[in-house]
Length: 369
Image (cartoon, rainbow, N blue to C red; front, side):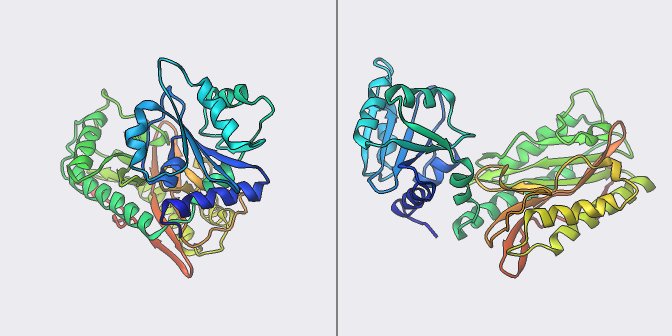
């Protein structure tokens, strides 16, 4: 697996060759960080790394980033620009140096003004969207990537364990969320993978709910946590649903159904299985239950430097999953106006099966509070 700057850049040069374009361009974001081994901010100043198929790479960057850039070990041509003079001349110099006629870019990451600056410098430059091919290089995780993911997951699980011990009836969702966030950082996170979802009662039936200041948790509520720590550049993404004080027969049955779907997805996971097959298996369990009308989401998505990345675990996606892929297995059932249940694991695909990076218990948990 690529482990040096030269190796990582060569992988993008190979993508350019496979797509029959002269070069690949990256901008600050997860692919940029993967390529360079260092992260840079995405802001109003354009910052572009260009990796040709058969020539040395080159970069355009704000002058204020030169000091940080030197730490990457990049030895290609660098074209810097200052706020006082603008970046038009730097784009013209970059493209004149490269002598390219076609360029593959990250369609979901490159901003429109950077695209326009490239075209203004060279109007006949052919630009294609290669988001899928470029991001696919991140799908197979290196041992170092998996180590970082484990760290993020373990931090998250320790934080949840501590948070559950603090819950009291009458707290607001927002108060519980604030406790969770504090615990995540106390356990060693570099940041949050995303804004946590802490949702109780009817709010738990909204898959992307926001914690409320004005709702006080009460006995019998489902309380859903969907959150993750970020560590060493990688994200955890975990969901657990607990019940407060007691659980109804319906809540117990819904939870059991979601858990069976989660376990069925794990059972079919192995290198070579398709994303379609996993989702079809998981969703099939939910569809066969009395709660089929409560299905609102696909089974999951890839996980790594971003919380949502390839592959997407959904029917119709016939992409075989290679060993080293990490995806989320997160079936859920949601009855709007009542309650929802979701159980989410982070799953590493192996040659002969899988490993669940998440170890937090999945058995129905009723919190005495």
